[in-house]
Length: 638
Picture 1 (cartoon, helix red, strand yellow):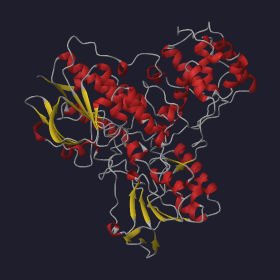
Picture 2 (cartoon, rainbow, N blue to C red):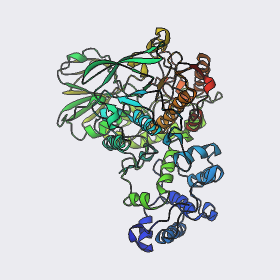
Picture 3 (cartoon, rainbow, N blue to C red):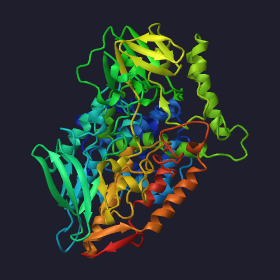
Picture 4 (cartoon, rainbow, N blue to C red):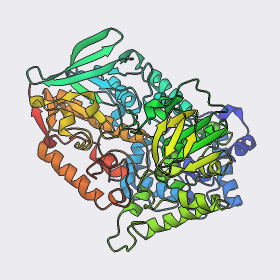
């Protein structure tokens, strides 16, 4: 039983009840059950109604009387310092029932142990120390101090594994440090986009802006005690496996110049969004004004009153354009193809006043709030992305549910742009929704209606000194160009110049743009080399990259534990194990929307193979990576 609590801030029962009015009642109900253990709270009339919106109705579909009864019961317990919590770990069976009640839908039982671990109800290897007779004999070099590098560093430090993190930047954060464009923010609910074992951030919004995320990552690097383990402004020039001493020989370039080192284990934590993609447009180098890539936004760039071209209409453009429109005199948006954009009520809303009080004072409220936000942005969409072989309209959708989504999104476009029929046609994609990364409406359609904003879907022919010329011969005079053209997402760790056994180059093994890996983490012929957020581990159907990183950090730590316990030098994934896994990935993708020929997407490489996103549910990948199977690996002795 949890330690007894004092009444929060000495508040009266009535004062507490008033503070509880700001709560999400589906979450509050779970807290009440933890506090009382009374199963009546898991039955009618207390059952919340299912709400699929990313920001749900806090009333949970419950009547005013029921909500008042729930708040009154919680206030009664909180005001009594003699009352603790009756249930801290519900166990799998009860956990599954609680999740189903909380969401208003049947949650499959296989999610129970994953969320029990995520919510801290049961221990997890990520938060453990190695119990070994001898000190850990393997040191680790982690390349990248972003989301993945920090969570792995924290796990290695707790486990007592010697390690160093290097990063090319002068601060932690990775993509959140580098992407500083106006409007940058998460498209994952904030409370799902944070580390499980760190102090929970006091997010101000349901979907936080980039500056807040970056500040959180800096704070985590301090909380984890990693600052003295990170070498900033340091780049990995090359890494080569040496079979003689069973170590990676690396060349680093940093403040002290170029130096050679060795390490037992090498980890790529550079992620997917680290190499900006610049379009090959004739004359771009002849432009007289400033050219800015969204991922390299100058800190003090002022575009007030300027005529600006934005090239691209993807995820970064959808966030940038509504912000730029408020300052520039003219905005020309050059679109190659339209995107499906999902409406989201409350996307930029701040969390209700008093929410932080609930997180601090109501037992397990923050745990279940995180679960609620994670669940509605998780695996529920994936079944609707599976191709129906009998579906007659494969060019526009992949099944009846996907077609319904298409109609809903089309209706939204037509409603928002009803006064501009020409824009409706230009903004309605021809490919199935969710076939490319789905975008969230941050004011995109409203911005397109502004008089000084012009959406152009005629292809660009060239750029000259003072403007952009389209293939119809029209010239658009602009002072500045913003490249919202995304990233080169296929090189991944191959950009690090890694050479494995027998002199094999990772770039050549991956044929330039065809990265593969067992579980997206290990590659045959590259012993003791691990990728984080590697091939086919992205989340095309929803979820949290932070959660993925935690799953992979857990797996890597288990591999290191096996090395130390067995007294061996290295692990190298077997070729047949890798190949069978890749075959399964490709086979599963052949049945999913991302291989639909009706569109092009950065999820696929030049061969048409899906290389970035995974075809599995989050819970499936969590289970695959939870414990290493030593039979998958060749054990290399000292």
